[in-house]
Amino acid sequence: MTTNPVGSEPPRLRGRPPNRNRDREILRIAQEIIADRGVSAVTMDEVSVRAGASKATLYRRWPNRVALVEAAAAAFQWDDRVPDTGNLVDDLNELMRSWNMPEGFDAGAVEKIIRSVVHSQPAWAAFHSATARTREDALAVVVERAVARGEALPGRNVALLNRIAQAMVADAIVLRGEAMTDAVLAEIVECILVPLLTGVHQPEIDGSPGGREPPSRPSPDGGRARHM
Image 1 (cartoon, one colour):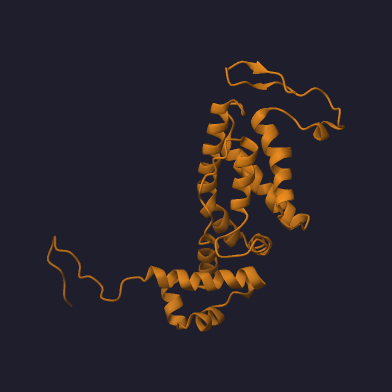
Image 2 (image 1 turned 90 degrees about the horizontal axis):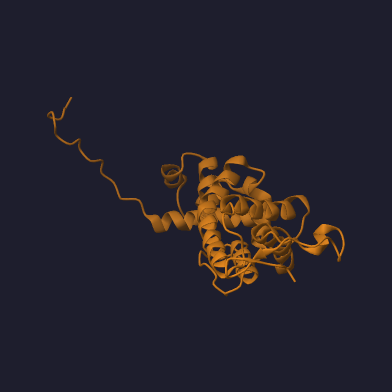
């Protein structure tokens, strides 16, 4: 048996380095299956055939089907640009729209994807955690700009607001079966996010078009301006 001298480096294993482009191609195929037929339809057999790769190749990268599904769920790509329209409501609407369309998929795909992955705890955890930080950072920039313009109150919990926004999207898709149209996303923005950020409640939330007088909102000069 050959041993290495004390202090020497162990021999390096031979073999080709990981091909990241190939990994992305395989994960894309798994994502297409998830978007088309759901998490349960993803099999090593079908992915290997469609990818033109042996199952041994897949198992070298992902030890089992669950690991492949988790990796595919975490690998969806989203537009990570931060909108800067100069207006809080418009920025939030743009941000919500960008979160609703994975790159390379049509607008309706996110509904199928969420309905599918939400029923698989590992897939849902991977899907959510892969994007949560990026979305939270983007929302933080939008909120900071709004605070600087006097449109939003300082000190809001952006991480919580991000979770609320995502929970509302999941609720609309999974529990109420709604399509994620611009109108639905705008409702989440105007009835949930804007009131939480500004402290100004929409009249319809207060119970009637002439509901109670809303609280004041911050003005650019640092004082308090009454909502008109």
